[in-house]
Length: 405
Ligand SMILES: NC(=O)C1=CN([C@@H]2O[C@H](COP(=O)(O)OP(=O)(O)OC[C@H]3O[C@@H](n4cnc5c(N)ncnc54)[C@H](OP(=O)(O)O)[C@@H]3O)[C@@H](O)[C@H]2O)C=CC1
Ligand SMILES: N[C@@H](CC=O)C(=O)O
Image (cartoon, rainbow, N blue to C red; front, side, top):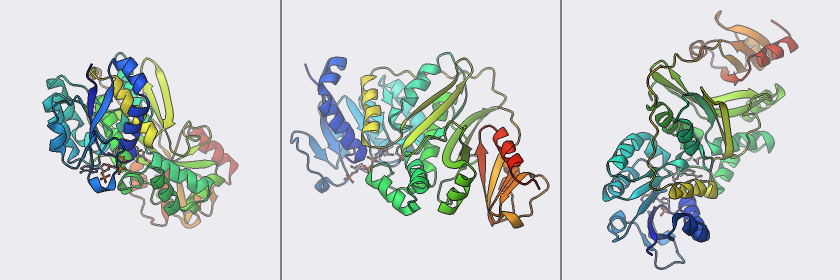
């Protein structure tokens, strides 16, 4: 019986993890799939960098040699950037291969075209590894979407940023040292700006939005902020208030649009993300029938990501993109004004009248209630605003504990 022939694009952290996992768990894969799985070819940028023990695997920097293999069943994309990944996967689908991708930048930009193409060619398209590393978030959402209507998704979607923030707080590491360790551990993107400036989490939110709401958020109207402004001093002030910095992505349907926000926020002990530390990611889903579901797990790294890809391999042949219900449009979730910690030279700050001051905590922190627009237009460069997520009562209790203004 012939084996399932795989073309693996990329042999970095993820590619190597997939190769090793397929080889190590051959017996299990064969038992489930009824066939052996064989990595027939590997695409890299620089062939000289690599030394493969298995000499009957084609190692090449030329994708054409892979796509023209006499037998090729699955192409796994673990390379970097929108291109050439998109072009390669189009060619693979057009040839009739199933495709699996970990490349969220490419998928955030071209996922919808690839889904359509995959349907036309009756092949499956796996993208579990594009969001949340090893967390089975895509399968969970596909399962949920059959009857439930999802109202909101919120979570930590970038392992590198969470690792850096945790290491700065817990280990007192500098930003640069923490990032270097995240790179050494294989968590960071090839260009780590993607992680620390919030692009990676934003791409993941785009992938979720397409799946859940059937549309991408408007890119220009979305907020995308990274963690590069956060200093050890700010982390210490937050800690003294019982708060932790978390880099949080949220998606919400507002009337006919999807609102996407990716930014650092502050959370208190009662918030579910407070204890999500290190490379862990967590996703909280609010759906109308089931209520809230929260998933947590390793958000980056070699084997968590390989796990997501190999799980996709098991689901080959199921091209199930659930229909998204468009009737009964959500009106958007009404809420009170958000609560913010303004960190910096707080004791001299003159705040506009539309800011409700809940408490002046110290010379470098003031807690306020204000609209996002009001905070965005705050004309004081000595202050940085971080939203405090969770139960607003938290901030009010806090305000009672400190000297009122
Ligand atoms: N690291 C992680 O935890 C996760 C990563 N991902 C995604 O998986 C993908 C791979 O990530 P990762 O393994 O960390 O990245 P690495 O930088 O470790 O590896 C990238 C691999 O792709 C090859 N490559 C890059 N560009 C090209 C190209 N144009 N043509 C051919 N080969 C190319 C490189 O070749 P060479 O070795 O010769 O340089 C290398 O083998 C990315 O899209 C990333 O966003 C998704 C989830 C988690
Ligand atoms: N660089 C990413 C890798 C996984 O998607 C991250 O840190 O989350």
